Amino acid sequence: MIQSDDEHDIAMFFASSVHDMKNSLGLMALMLEKAVRAGERDSGNLLYEVRRINSNLMHLLALYKLGNKLYPFDPTDVAISHLFHDLQLQSDILLKSRNVQLEVEVDEDLTWHFDFDLVFGVLGSAVNNAFKYTENTIRLTATATDDEIELRVEDNGCGFPSSMLVDGRGGLNGIDFAKGSTGLGLYFADRVAGLHRNQQRRGSIRLENGGTLGGGCFILTLP
Image (cartoon, rainbow, N blue to C red; front, side, top):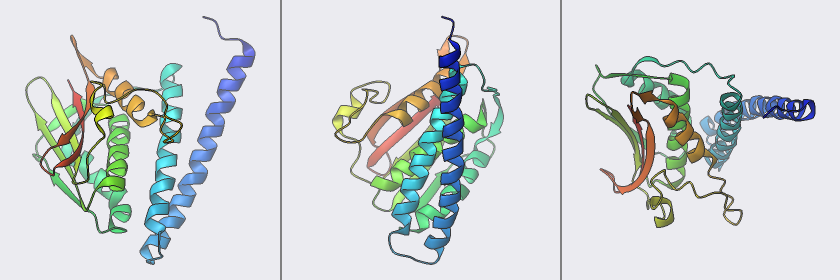
């Protein structure tokens, strides 16, 4: 279907606005990080909320680019230890605000072929979400076979509600206005997973409860 000029202009305005807000929230996050370092009360929760909104805006912008074939999808060979290290650096200040430990288990020699930025965005959001619900520990793990790699973000909180575990795609059940949940993060993760294909196999996501820490588990599987 051919897009009208008005629709094109609105779409471009939307994308530009999202980009603008993302930059503004990025500056707010830097200021809040300074507040966290200074030990100001509730600054960790504020930083979490800002990062959540910033992440959602980035997801919207990425989905817009993907939908309009503007995103330069670029899978490369990535050292998983490098990916996890960058996730640790990004979340360090946030986790320290509540004394949450981030454990990492990965073979230093493990590499896989995927788009680094997209996968980093998916796992970064999962870590941010785990921060809200965990008691005191989040765990990153990676296991691989000849056919696929499984990247897990686990926590020791109360786990996901059963309604989110029914759907094999991770509870992509639409918008819940009462709870303020759009499912955007899971939708984005599912889209990113699906972009990664190898012959007849495609990436996938799922949610579980239990794991090594007994709480919620977000799992991204890539072929």
